[in-house]
Length: 450
Image (tube, rainbow, N blue to C red):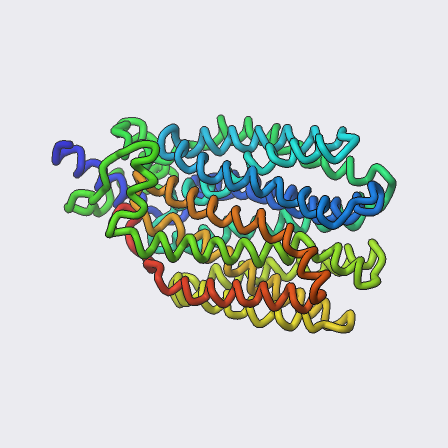
């Protein structure tokens, strides 16, 4: 590649970082964020639906666990493949395709009459969902100016709380309203199939990705429109040094590059954090409504408690969004993971409604703040040619844990009750806290730099 091309790519990167937060950024953020919220709504709904189907269909704990876990099997596959496709085909196209896949599968789930078909459809729901999340965070991070990139990604992740709150509202008001309430809940999940069209035609492709593929004229048009939107000069202060990038490789070669000496420690660390956080988060939050029912609360009360607990996610994201640009990525992530570990133990010890709600809200606050920081740091630790692959494989490794956790929770509950389960979750949060210190903190640095 010639030096003039490198300089052009460097210029595009510097111009993106020089922009203030504009309407173009807001459109990218909200467009991706609504998709993110719809994803959360789907994942949240299944926790309420499992609690209802366990009664209506007389499901065993093992079968109920598989309904949750099969979706995460699809997510593990989707996250790994989706990241590779995003580096090859582009961020926006893969984002739209994944929304379409899981939106249709979720809507079709409203028509099932038995467990077998539901399991098949939940796999395809997970396939689309697993691919979408790391692609969306990569996509938004490549638009965000370096000085506020972490905050923007945490705000994107905060849309998860909006979607999970929506699922809690549906769980509280719609699902218990009739015997077919869970079917109406699934039908609402078909909304992403329509939204996929908006994503495909309404949002631009990542100019950083376009430049990495040599499509500089397309990238130039997008950046120029953003500069016009910001009423800036066409070329603000430009970095003179060329962009340091890895060679553009494909398939297995890209995955292998994640373990090159330059990236080895950060890959091991981020995979460990993703695995541990997924295990603890999905093990806890998928089963909380069912755990409360088994503890003697009726469906209405357990769903109501879950709704209140869910509301604590939003201030958790808000705190992380502020702190991530003040403390940095590693400190913020570690503090919120440590808070999650402590909250999990307290929740396991809870023996009253006040303790259940208080500890649950603390767990929501710290855990979702940690998720925001994790999604912010993951795309930043790899260069553009590996960013989708790196984020996708980290998420894919995490999904392995999310497959295992829902299956193990019934076993842990039978062996030692809620206390044993939440002590185990606390241990996983503690391991993630330690692993976070192996990550690279790139607060304020340009994305294309190592």
